[in-house]
Length: 336
Image 1 (cartoon, rainbow, N blue to C red):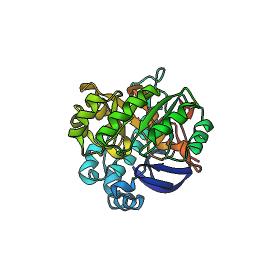
Image 2 (cartoon, one colour; image 1 turned 180 degrees about the vertical axis):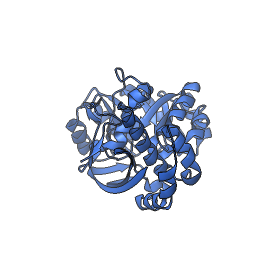
Image 3 (cartoon, rainbow, N blue to C red; image 1 turned 90 degrees about the vertical axis):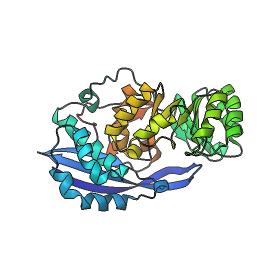
Image 4 (cartoon, rainbow, N blue to C red; image 1 turned 60 degrees about the vertical axis):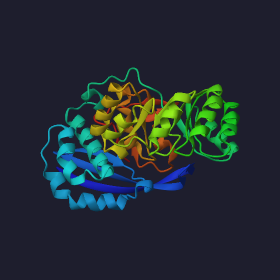
């Protein structure tokens, strides 16, 4: 097996502001695993919040190049387990390699990945479109640019309720709100009452990630379901979150790829949790990987490639929130 790596600098269409800060561009890491003339593509966008860069991923990939290329595997989960002792501390590199392995594995069978996984895409959830924090007029403009049935609104300001009231005047679409750890307990409970009246479906990660015990009060008193994001990163977090949240948001780059994500989904279902999958600011490679898991999800946020102006890949894309698949095997994705 051969390995190639790429770093792409993705330019944001708009300044992307959340409670953690503002971004104008994002670097993403892409790998190609090839064997007998067939290549699989994988991607992971590291987050500054975790102190990992694309350069770190490239250095680690080069350090382990020989092992990555020589490991024998029949199923991507085997490769994940064999690489875990070498890369387990770096879920972002593990993710990129895991997605590439699934792409390669499905291509060898000449099947779209969802079919190789035994899934059916006839009934799948629509994606939301994310509206970052900005002046209300700019948020309205962004919302009108893309006609989606669902919008995820980033909050974490002193004017959160006024923002939602203003946006609600412009559309009857479903709203989801993501505070990105920017609220307090009383604030969350108080906001939930107003947001429920304004047609909001759920609240994502209101409190800081490590404040799980306080989430019990929030979950009990909130007028809306609460979904864990920053509190749920890896497999062991799902069960920890179960008493405190109504659902979990799984992100491939953070948990280490499709292999652990499938296990997380299973654990979530065993604990009666709703399952959401979210994205990073990433290319169509990462977005396509999420798309093939849609039959397993209740909610999805897979608009990351729509937020950039220089997508270097093509694959599954969104049309008014609906995932549109092509007829290519694997992820159905390729570099331009």
